[in-house]
Length: 298
Image 1: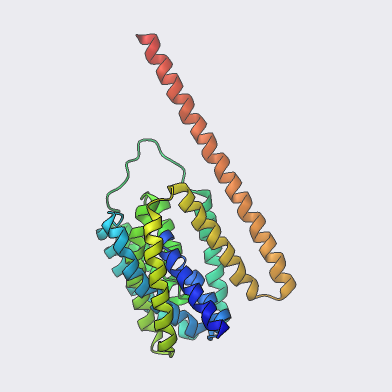
Image 2: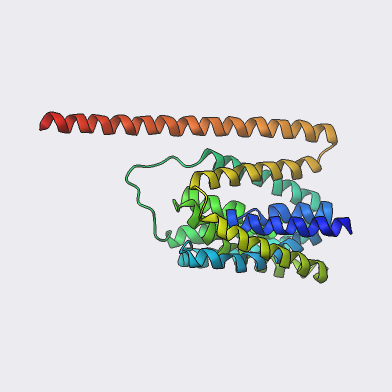
């Protein structure tokens, strides 16, 4: 009974994460279903795809009403991702569960470092309305393959791809990612169903709780500053990635790894902040010189 209550509470957090950050659903769902609900790893991954897919489909609604969704980019990314996700889901049947979870954690940590560091601002670069089609397709297939393999809805890869590489504002990247996550999660689930059985009663209960959380998270997303949202996403993924990775190792090795990961991430964050600060000082200096020059001409 206690495990069920904890699972439902965790499911609400899954929904809040998806609605607020546009990702993190599977990052929470897989450990929750494995370590709290007690499901085998592959069944947990398949169940997480169902939960995250349904929750994302509902969670996109408040973002759409607030005009925080790039529909063309999201749909193209999603269709490309579905192809990779289905292939990844079929391929996962031949890969040991421990390997899948370890790969899952390592990708989480790499993505978190990129989000915390942030993208270097470029002067005069306009915010794109939609992203280039070829680039969206390529990114979609790659992210989709990862989605199907490790059971991640892809938000922890889609959001950085849209925000860091595509240049979309963080709130728009969050809303658009939910479209992609829903499409790819269902495709990945279809691949898994050929080799994994799902406890549909548990999956339905977790999904309902997660949907409630996603609607709450969607309402909060538009009220939080972009840089706070990005940093929150990054540190959240660091915490969950370190936890999953540590569980795959002996206790002492796991503890040492968590300390090493934390130190490395802090270093990346500090370096990124200094780089952005230096860039900001340069822009300020150029602006002052331009004003002074204008004054002299006058």
